[in-house]
Amino acid sequence: MGLTQWAYRLSEAMLADPLPRRWAHSLGVAERARSLSPILGSDAELLEAAAVLHDVGYSPAIAATGFHPLDGARFLRDQEGADERVVRLVAHHSCALLEAEERGLRDELASEFELERPDLVDALVFCDMTTTPDGAQTTPAERLDEIVQRYGPDTIVGRFIQRAAPEIHAASKRVGDRMAESAVGG
Picture 1 (spheres, rainbow, N blue to C red):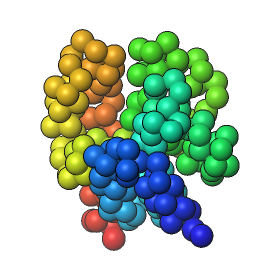
Picture 2: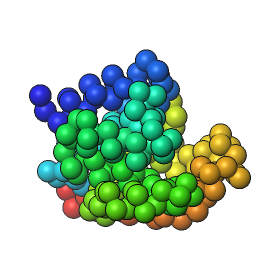
Picture 3: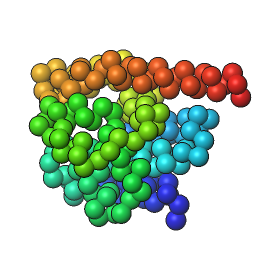
C-alpha cells in the first residue's frame, strides 16, 4: 500500500465516523495539496499524506493533551510508525508552535518534533488555510475570520490564530508566488 492510500485509510478510520466535518475538511486539504503538485515534485505524495492526516489528533480515540498537532504526531510516530517527515508536518502544521505556546506546550512540541523543510511547511499552511471546515476552497482571510468567529477572539485558538495571521498570509503568498512562477516557467 502506498503512502497516500495508507494515509487516507487511517484518516478516514480516525475521523469519518466521530468527526465527519473534520473528515470533510481533511479531504479538502488533501485536494488542495494535490493541486500544488507542480511545485512539489517528488514531495507531492508526502504533502498529500500529511494533508489528509493533519487533523487526525482531533480523533477522540487518541486525543490526550487536547492539542491536536501534538496528539496526532505522537499517534502517528508511536502507534503507526509513520514516515518521519509526515509526522513532522502534522506536528507543526499551520503555525502549531504559536498555539503550543498558548497552551504551555511549546517546549514539548519543539523538543519532540523537528520542523520540516520551510517550503513544505508553507504548502501545508496554504492547504489548511484555504479550506473551509466543510472542505470547500476559501481564502486565507476568510478562513482566519471563520476560525476567530467559531472559537472567539479571546480563546486559546482565537488568540493563537490572530498571532499567526501574518505568517499564514506570508506562507500563502509564498506558495501562490511559486505556483505562478511554475505556470509561467512550465
